[in-house]
Structures are given as C-alpha cells and as structure tokens.
Length: 339
Image 1 (cartoon, rainbow, N blue to C red):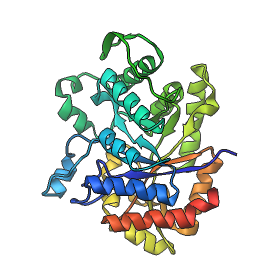
Image 2 (spheres, rainbow, N blue to C red; image 1 turned 135 degrees about the vertical axis):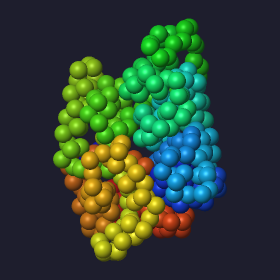
Image 3 (cartoon, helix red, strand yellow; image 1 turned 60 degrees about the vertical axis):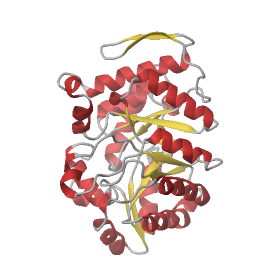
Image 4 (cartoon, one colour; image 1 turned 90 degrees about the horizontal axis):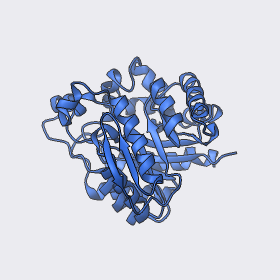
C-alpha cells in the first residue's frame, strides 16, 4: 500500500481570498512551514497571484499582499529539514518557460530535491487579462500551458534544448544545473477533463480541487487513459487533490466555523471557474469539513478511488492562531489513522 501524504497550504497569495487582510507576512509563511514539519505534514504548498481579483477589490479597502511563491519556498526550505515544498499552483501562461525552468531547477537544488511544481492555467481569467492584455484577446490558456509543459520537459531533460511553438520559442538553450529529481515532479492542477488528460500526458501528478468522489473517480480514468496514450505508466501519476478543511468535535460547530471564515467566501467566488456548477452546500460535502469522524470518512472515500496525496490543504480560520489550531487538530485526530 502506498504511503498517504498530507500537505498544508502556505498563505503566499491568500490574503483577501482565503484569509481576511492583513494576514500574511514573511514570518507567518515560515512559521506555517515550520509548524507543518513539526506536526508531521509531508509538504507545504504555496499559491501564486500577481494582482488583486475584482471581487477582492470590492470587498476589502486594503490591498492584499501576494508574496512570490518561489522566494517564499526558498526561505521555507532553509527553515526546515525534510519538509517538501511545492507550488499550488504556478500560473504557467504568465511565465517564460526558460526563466521558470531556471527558477525550478535552482530551487530543487537548494532544497536538496524537495521541490514539486504545481502547474495550472490559473483560476481567474481576469488576472491573465491584466498581465497579458494583448495576448488574452486571442490566446487560449490551455494551449499556453501545453506549450509551457512541453518546453519545461525539454529544458529539464535535454543538454541543449530548442522549442518552437505558437506562443513560446527558444533556441539552443543549455540549462544547467538540472533539477536534482529525475523525472522532476510536475503536478497539473485543475478540474476539467482536459486538465485531467493534460496531467496524464505531461504530469507526475494531478491536483483537482474540492471535487466529489464520483466525479474524481471518473476523471482518474481520464488521467490514466491519457497516460497510456502517451506511452507512460498510468500508475506513476499521483492523484493529489486539494481541499478546504474545517474540523471540530461535532459537525454543526465545524460547519458554523467554516461559514464565518473567509475561506467560505473564496469558495463562493470560484463558482464561475474551478468550482463551476457546485452549490454552497456542496462545498461542505466536497471538502474536509465536519466532525473528526466525518473528515476521516471522507478521506477514506478518496483513498478508495486511488488518492495517495492530499495536496495543500487550506485550513480555515480568521487569524494565524485559528489556522495553526486546525492544523494541530488534523495532525492529531485525522492523519494518524492513515499512517
């Protein structure tokens, strides 16, 4: 039986989204990582945003602080010993693949091979339109990420790499050093079937978010089918969903806590993108929210369909103390059953 891994989310780009500002400082990010390692989590995952989302501007007067995940993770790696570090996710359409490859390889080297790159198109198209206004008029983000992933693979495996795509192009690039890990782990994030197939084709893992068991089971089939079509071993693609979490001894208290948190408001904001088609009540059922027994049961259901990694669990709370308390509850009441 494969080891079941649990990861905690880092609040690199979560102010105004998951947590009410002010929340994040460099010290908070490092403390969450250190506490995660002390509590026995396997990894921490930092998200990426470059500019404020429209709904966040409307809700908060202060501008949220979004920290660069690569720089943040480098500090977290230096402040821990064994904890793996990861992005969840890096918005590939907003990055030059050569520069990104250099950042990834450098971070993997400095961390001693502890880095995982979570890759996606980004949940908010408005962010793409803000940073790439001309490109956004004609480009499809799915095509951009496909090219980006192809380019990264070449840069990580070829001594001298060249690539000529519709959006990205480079010639005769000799990237050194390469990452420590070979193959380097890239986990593709997103809930659409096209994303599941992308993960099977390109990734070492797939990161869906807040997805019902039945839907995830179906899309795991798409991941495996795409892997087979690409000539890959379908069993090497790690299924690593991300969930929101709010725990308590009884279900009613946990749900009440969740509904007063900014994490719940963020889930509502994703109704037009990642969580399209889900009702607010479904967010509760499709995430790790409820009593300790509820959450243990949900985790087991996902394990039964092939999940072996719970990536970047977003613990709810209205301040750092709340988040750390949720992490401690999870580490004490939930994780031991699956070790």
